[in-house]
Length: 317
Length: 265
Image 1 (cartoon, each protein chain N blue to C red):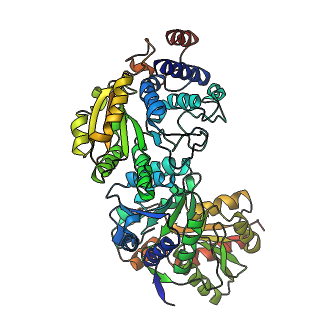
Image 2 (tube, helix red, strand yellow; image 1 turned 120 degrees about the vertical axis):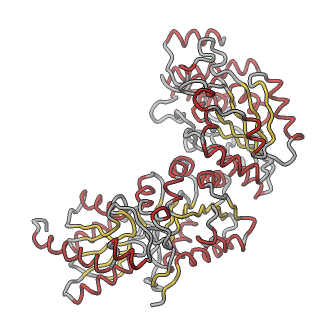
Image 3 (cartoon, one colour; image 1 turned 180 degrees about the vertical axis):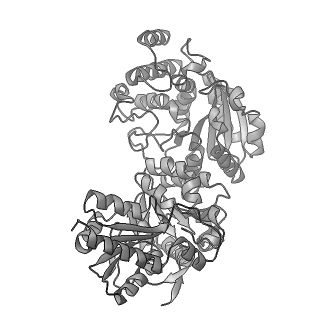
């Protein structure tokens, strides 16, 4: 499988969409060469705005632009575009219900070794908790392209995570991304791994490993955290009876929490969350970070074994 | 305009009475500024609040919402019948301006410091579309303590937003006391000029001076955004509220309402 860069794909696709949608404008805060919106700057210099290291102002400007009919992509690292600009996102964008596309690049732990200050372990929790925001986390370059198009065609405040590095292609030509719809990448009946973003690849690997141990594990990619595919989650619970979530994010407030909220109110089944366990990240190569913070296919497989064991012991069906 | 201002002040008092909450003195201090802007300067169409060529107005000091509502109601953006629903549940008149509920409100404000950035976005939209509408942003003086305002000021000055005009309702007070005692924002003129703005000052309650100031801006500022420092009295028009710190967000008693309305007859 060929690995394709998520941020490069984002940068290229932004230009492609820019050609089709003349109302798209891009705002940057001195990170363009990292987030790859510099490609858009080169293609459309009159529609690219450099705000400097002033993220709150940039978010406000994006909101103002949206009131004039523009489709602003305000691009920064996930950590800055969620924590630093939280109030601006909440009030100028979300409460005002404006068509701003907030991009959180270098998402999760994989921030080119820059460490905790540049990693976003809580951006999904923040965005999910603010009303009116659609939250999308693409798993590969194919989904990134489709998700970006869907986001442009959708009218409303949106948060899009863009991972930094290269990941395998998971989706084939038959795939059609739809906001709010999860997708089953592998069928199974003993348990389901619900994952998002770049951990979906690890989820598929985990399912493969577990097959050799006699377990039939479903893998569902849940790229939209809000609005959540509640029906999809319930279906997995009913049909497989055990769920493990996996995300490049804290286990507090992100995909795992979202799934747990649904299960508890509808179909309570044994469940476990794989993710960053309420700690800050640190500097290190991606592979070391994955190992240390439990974001591997082994970690996922281990949790699947445990929930299956709980399922078999449990009084629930 | 004096008669209009008096009527607007009466509407403010009645709204605050109906809601039994709100921000009296900060609303009263901006009445002349809004009167001059909305009746003499801004190109608007109350029957078409989204007319693409309209001038934009952002109330960055969102707690002065009653003043904005008084003007918008008087101009016909919505029926003045709504005044009595201010701060009531389901009302189109929220405690702070809500873009999704009130015709004539460009963006939701209330969390101080955000309006100038949004105004820049609107002014930028004008530049991109080759439109000649201007964007006006009204800030509070206490609000200038907020960092985002300075990010916005830096950006607008550097990028020469000549279609952007900011006004500071410089009433010298904030919630807890005199601005100079809480966190002194002076010297304002030097600060904004250092940020490459054209700065002018005026009496914020004098119609002629306000009008002259706004009209004069066009010639004077040569490719820079403009700041009008309007010197005002917090609580202006109601004698027992003028320059009194306690009236930032205090509900009036029935007697106080009657007294205020009597003064504004």
